[in-house]
Length: 276
Ligand SMILES: [Zn+2]
Image (cartoon, rainbow, N blue to C red):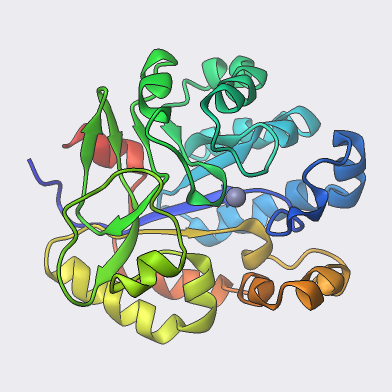
């Protein structure tokens, strides 16, 4: 069955420095100091903006260790608690993915986590049997046109949305991440906060059109794009200097989110998957 159209708002709950690869292999304590409780402070304002609109939050496990109240508060407010990774870095080796997942298994079980979002929306096909083994119902770790839902090893893949400009793709094999190949293939990845940062009006209009056509777009934002952490993006300047493409992630998108919530119905991806 095709579920009624709604906007699937997701939040990849990670620290302000996560878009840069420079911090990935530092000790967890160093990242905790850099985070400086900013990710904890970001939560209440986000929950307030969401109000009665439901969203899925994909948490970074080491942050749950720093602040166990994060999943607690998210789930109490009626939102979905999902898994992003234990430590945020590129994870495309299935053995590494399993090690990472196991490191977070306590809170994954405690909150009955059913949804997975790979870091950088970049994963491999072997992730689906692994997720099935660990009782996940779905993954949202590829880019593909809205409405695509593929069952792999009994786990749904509900991709972050693209708009196909030429023809609708038919092949949905991981990895399908944001790279030149995807864009050159004629897919406009409007579900990414990167694209939202650059083309928010266009993205708004695409979402409106998709919903009218009966499709349910998946978009993602980050906590540091909704609230602004202290000293940010100043602290991120060197990262942007070396990687100018990180710039759209530093733009505040709280107004955009409010505008979406005012205009469109939302649900968590878990609710959507239950209706498939
Ligand atoms: Zn991420």
